[in-house]
Image (cartoon, rainbow, N blue to C red; front, top):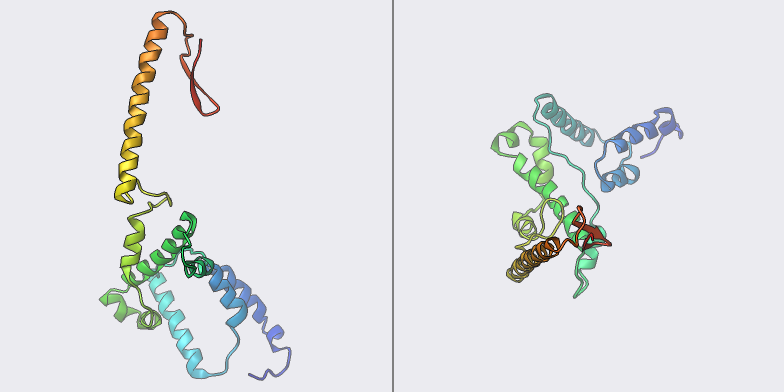
Length: 204
């Protein structure tokens, strides 16, 4: 689009508009899009379509029915590494992907029949997208909300965790036996047990 005068961007303070818009983005991809893709346009159909989307968004806000936006991280690097045969994704990367999938889940669940009719301009934005909740459910079977691997993420892991718990209980039982023996002989101080360098020790 030809600008007349040439410094029209500056006269309209369009850069300040972009700064305000960028500050409202909830992810790096959105901020990059603001910086690189948004330009003034003179096509009336395009302008009216964008205004209709903004109006629909504001209508939801005003009706106490906000669009379910939440922060997300760019997972481009994680997805690229997943294409490498034999690569094992770190738990942090899996959590980032899951958080992004949850954003998709919230948005798709938001658009029930009533909201599809109430906000058709916004619903049209997600219609071309493909989302399968099965991947999210599969990830949630493995990691919890804090990004930690669940004890029952697999049958083998569950067996190992149970074995570790059993061993820990046995060690605690033996430790109590030793404490009782040493206490009966008067070898222990009032503060019987403490930790040094991550190890349990007895105070004599």
